[in-house]
Amino acid sequence: MAGAAALLLQAHPDWTGADVHEAIRNGALVDEHVGNAPNDDFGYGKLRIHRSLFGQDPPAGSDPRISIDPVTAYAGVEVSIPIDVSDMDEPAASLVLDADLDYHCA
Image (cartoon, rainbow, N blue to C red):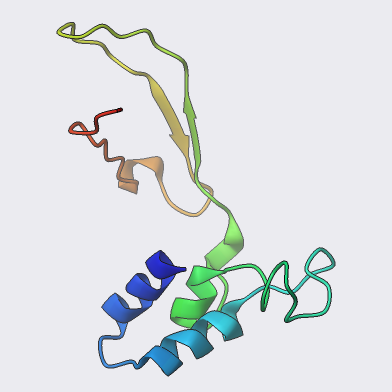
């Protein structure tokens, strides 16, 4: 929820906490799994950040598909990682993939 609130405040820096709360509540999905909302399991429903940000569902509503085959990598050895990307709404060339190369596991 903190990440969703941060996205909303970035898009609408003039919003108050109450505005963010209302946008998240209004964007929430209530379906047969949620039941009567609000409730202790789902609150006001399932988070739909696009609806909270823009007041509508994303165009065409399809998610991009990303497929990565497992690759064995060793420290200090360059490796190529084949990634298959497709999106029904946009050409794959317009998608941006970003890797956190500074990520360290503990």
